[in-house]
Image (cartoon, rainbow, N blue to C red):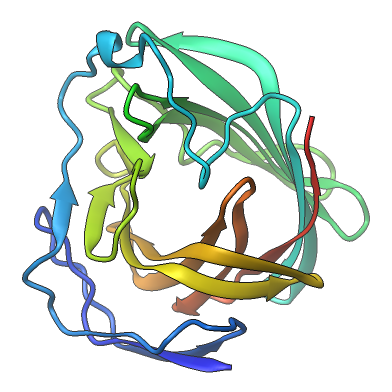
Length: 254
């Protein structure tokens, strides 16, 4: 059990700080102390996307978009036990001239009812950067009625911009905006490690990317996520401001 201390998290585009000390079940992950890093590499999302950069697509091992891939998670949020099924579908959607891949993400309660259903749109460019073009999401009450569609956005609409969900060559100090629709979708990430080793559900993953992620809309909430090659996120948990924790328990490859 290693201790992670965030003295400050920051991006060139926005100062977003949190002081956190917590434990994360990870093997080989050295303690990290970050104090207002001045050498963060910031990848700003451009106002317009160049479709030509997506004419050919280079796969990113840390965020695979191969149709038929299914990752199942189990977790807990605010004391409620949940399961999650993430499916890379064969569906595509044209957004700003780019053919994006549709990922279907469903969160279930312990009784089997759907708590949240989301369709996310991603595309890898010619260099292997994976871009996030938006999502259509909805949360549901216990009776199956839509509670909220807050968080839905689409690049090119109402000022929304595509962001980067995973760089082609993730390195510590890389920081970037993952999504942007002012007041609705403002997630950001900061990579702190690319050589972690984690054990999740009896499986050992190496050369894992670890990132701190947060939103300007919930500045008190900071989470850590671990991305493994061939899978994507294998475990994540809130470090401050929340109680959410999920881990991958099964991965099906096509």
